[in-house]
Length: 430
Image 1 (cartoon, rainbow, N blue to C red):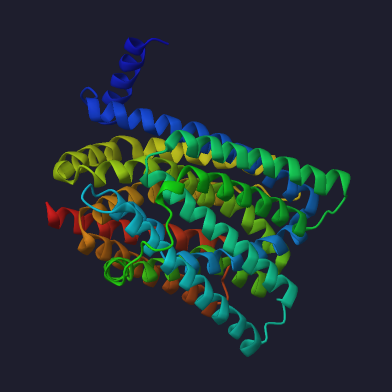
Image 2: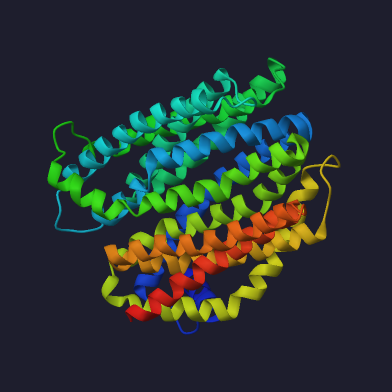
């Protein structure tokens, strides 16, 4: 396809979603986005195929055990990072800063987080005496959490340095590694437990982090950090604590609650609907934000034009996105096999969540790009959403009506409330 034809297609898409022709900045944004989508979606397809294979091979009960294991690792990894990846994007987008000073200070804080929260996790394990979590499971979950958090930080530095091509190939490579190692574990070694899946994800994450760190090695220094810069990052990032804790609870504690109240088999069934809607919705949104946030952060002076475009896109695309997302969730659920029930009500709720999550995230990231106060308000919006989420869960639990539908509805209203608050904050600033 020639450059002229590409421009014509871009203008048509811009006209349908927003109106008017695409400008030069929009074209550059579209180019970076296409590279990100190429790598991100390719990797996601590979990892998603792996997830389907594992769910079909293991069955709901064993897959439910993996969901619990992953939830623990994910909560801990969120605490390790504490939104430091967002700080990297925010500070490194500024042109008048010393990048090594920023990255060294961020990595120092990241190391401190790992030490502190690993100690707290061990303390909580022995203090509360969890009967369903053995010491081996905890060690494995903590190791998995370190890999997830390191990978997330490397990915953030690649984005901040606008190395979208390298990032795309790294994600594809990670997907290939996971597929190959999973085939070895399940096929050759016949280790058909959730440990095989977790192990393949760890190996893929380690390789991503090692190779990715080579591309951003110009950032690294052991003597670049300063107390002043760490203080600046901490003051900006302290609000990320709210975000990390709330997201950790909302996106992971539900699996733990379902496993405890309704059993690991039900947790396994919930996990595939969660993957088909919440995880996929977050992944697609993340791919868009991967380019969207650095772009608007470096052009804050034109933020009003960005907001108008997002407003028009919301009006035109929300209902079509719900329909397309619901159809996508339905197809995905069918791929998991007969062991997992096909429920249209759950599917439509999943489609609604994807659409709500996408637009709520856009307004939230616009707000956080404006200033440190905007980032604080963005994190505050999660608090309002969490109040609604917790109210729905607590109310239905008290009435003995806690089901998978309850959690899906609670997730939708969590994102609606958070997105609405972020939208109101955005409108106050322009």
